[in-house]
Amino acid sequence: TCLNIGCIPSKALIHAADAFHQAHHCMGDHTLGIHVEGARIDVAQTVRWKDGIVARLTGGVGALLKKHGVKVVKGWARMVDGKTVDVDLGRGDAEPTRIQCEHLLLASGSVELGLPGMPFGGKVISSKQALSPDHIPAKLVVVGGGYIGLELGTVYRKLGAEVTVVEAQQRILPLYDEELTKPVAASLRRLGVQVLLGAKVQGLDESGNVRVLDASGRESALAADQVLVAIGRVPHTHGWGLEKLMLDMQGRAVKVDDQCATSMRNVWAIGDLTGEPMLAHRAMAQGEMVAEIIAGQRRRFAPASIPAVCYTDP
Image (cartoon, rainbow, N blue to C red; front, side, top):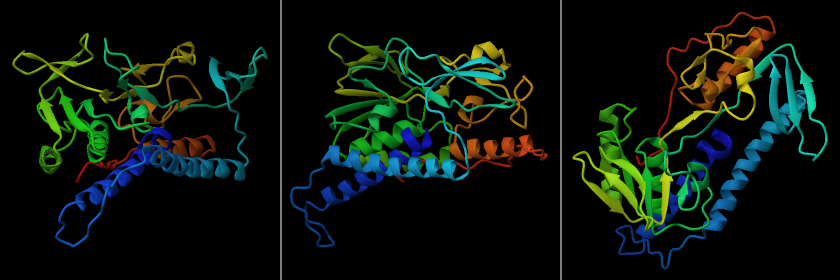
């Protein structure tokens, strides 16, 4: 997620949006004496530049795997049992390739959480689509005032969209220390981002407007050319046969101990599949530990704390 459709592409777009915002700011009488005429952005070129960064970094990971003699099989895998995986290589009628193992590591990541009654499609987009826009909508409604919604909402606002953020809690970034979020709220006001707190999205009306229920129970409609649903991510547990292993679960996540061992011997799970915090550096630290345990070392995953960064403005 981080490399392909998360942190890396979003940071690239944040950088481009900041640069465009600065150029736009210089179109008037600027105190520094900098004057820019007719600033515009070629969104297609920005997306190509972002994709190039992602391709270079994923290519680097591929090169590391090759250098260390890791066999990479590209296809769609389904669990048969705790020692066996069938992989569809996408060759039409060909039988799937069966891979057997002594140790099985599950790292299927996470997927965007959708809103009931407002599925992704048409004008309703996920963060994945928001990272590869073909145009900037005139009016964007962002459902969710967490870090994903605010990072991308800020990008779209700096690129010229009118942005409204709808958050069900009474403050933005509800998982962060309130004191830290006050400068972000002030920045959103300066940028002209409208924030509706204690409000819940009910769906789309017949005209395609977003129906919102405020804290007092009044319903209103927000005009929107696009709706970005950013209410979080959930472990990717469906569509690849996880249920055949009958592992112990912890809510939607696979339950693991402090060695990332699941309830089945020699079956391990790391990363977003094991729940919060869904961070790439946590997954990598867990993966290294599991590799060392399989190699015969004694390790435990007991971090004193796990750092996280929220790339809003500031």
